[in-house]
Picture: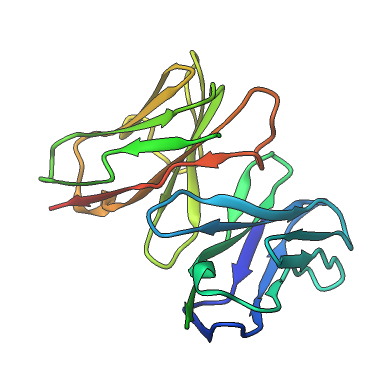
Length: 111
Length: 117
């Protein structure tokens, strides 16, 4: 079946460090891939998405590339800020039009 | 825009009681609402999908008599956990989407933490 696996957290970084959060998926067909972010006390928000192989989603300095050959959608940011501290969820849109989420990765950025 | 609220944000109840959780779309009409639950260090798991004015569609393994879902208006859906037991303790999250938008365009509430003693 369809599933998403992402690295366990927490990921702890200093401000301006480079960020990578790994995400791999298993799916039939050609799913769309997403990263959601949940700031403390708030609901999940769509951060970026990619709908086909080799697409790159980007937003707020974050980016992720849909890699079909490695079934991956790793999230990256060149220079993190304290305000990026949140929980990040990788997800895919299955062929039944439902969202399937990874377990979430907590990012903590310190000044 | 596209704000979804949940009430209460957390609730503690005794085993055997029922708990109602509300999910509201504050500034748009939500034709479809989704209910998820999340265990510690696990994924959000879809419990059911509800469309306004019709019965909810439950995912496999989710007891519909245990988790009653009502989507009576375009801005409100409720989840009632009936005869709650400690194993029902979890984080419940709702989301909503607008007419014509796919599953990826969901607006999420902040979640409700339920603890059953």
